[in-house]
Length: 188
Image (cartoon, rainbow, N blue to C red; front, side, top):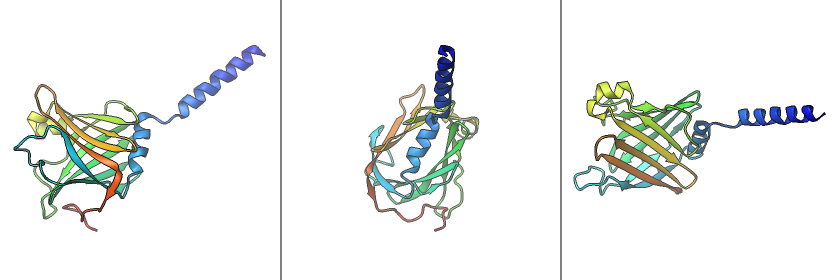
């Protein structure tokens, strides 16, 4: 009887552990709670006098939430050229940067980013630069991007390993703002 009890206890523990969502699944679900909403942000690391973001209104819009893809346009003042594209494949998430011209055509520097190397945590995912990024932007080969998310904030971060380059923009997700018009390259 004692052995049966321990066997049931072990099986119950294994079953409940196996059913727990992974860090990437929890991250994904948290991010999806913001779908359709826009939030204003501010540079919280890496601002400089010659930075094209400084002094501009920064807005993210969690515009499109599909089962395995979330697209987040990032507006810098009147510049609507940037969209962060997150794709989930099994336990890992990929971050790509979709850059467009005002006419909607792709920029020559677009689709760079990376894929997480593991399932990560519920509130943070890391994306080291992939080979496509290295081929496209050689100096970005050592880039590591990361996104943090919880019910109060979303942050987009970049660190170029081996340099002083760091950038963070943080958005307050407790205060939705008016959604800007469509980013460049999107049809309403």
